[in-house]
Each structure stands twice: as structure tokens, then as C-alpha cells.
Image 1 (cartoon, helix red, strand yellow):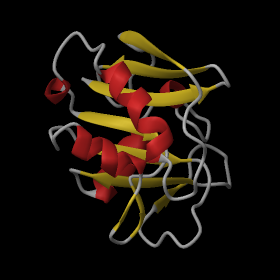
Image 2: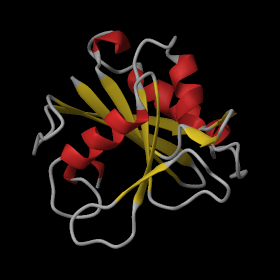
Image 3: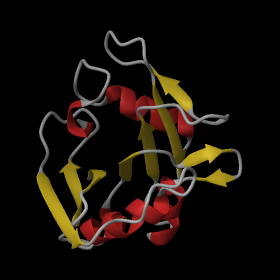
Image 4: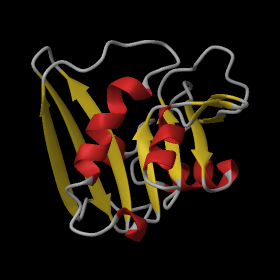
Length: 159
């Protein structure tokens, strides 16, 4: 079982979603979970994105009908690594879950100075996604994201 996670914010509420799916090329989710947190999320600070998103991601993972270690991987909208030896939000999620499940970061925009993100072109797009990972080889992580369903730049279940 795999999971894609994302967070959305408003001035009064933060929502985190989790889409569960069976295999990398799945067209449809097997389940969808949502966690709503009241109050404004922490402000955006470049390089400290985890302070804003991590509480919401952990809240939605708490709604899983099983323990997180059942999952084969978590896929996040963002970076696991901002650069060598520079952890990003995905790395903090990996640590917060006890290093029990690999985390793959899929970022839509390049983070300046990141020397570890692997670019991935999907579909007809000439703008790459940037893949980072912890708990599994980054090349395998990029290959998994490439296999995901959809012919567009953004895989179907990440959209």
C-alpha cells in the first residue's frame, strides 16, 4: 500500500489529505482520508516548510486504519532534501514516523541550490518534477514516480 499526502491552508483552517493506492501505476485510489486542523498554519519560511506542514501530515496519518509501517512509501508534494545534508519536509516526516516508511518528495518547482534532486520529465512536459527520497534509493524513487498513472507532468494521484 502506498500513500500520497498534501496540505492546503486558509486563514482559519489547515487541511491535509491522504490518498491510498495499491501500486505505483494505480489509476484510482483505494481510500481517501482528510484531517482538518483549526487555526492558521505557521507562516512560510524557505527551508523550514516542515514547520508549516508536518503537524497536518501527522494528523492525517493518524487517521489511517492501520499503522504507518504497513505502507511501502509516502509521497509528498515537496522536498525530502533541500541539498546535501540539508533536510527538507519529507525528511522530517520520515523522522517523525520513526523511520519506518520511505518518503519520496515530488516538487513542482526547483529549490535554488539543491544539488541532490533528480529531475523527471513526464508526458509532453518540458518542465521537470524534482524527486528526492529517504529510506530508499533516489533513482528507484524517481522510477516509481515515472511509473505512476497519467500522461501529464503531474501523475494522476498527485494532481
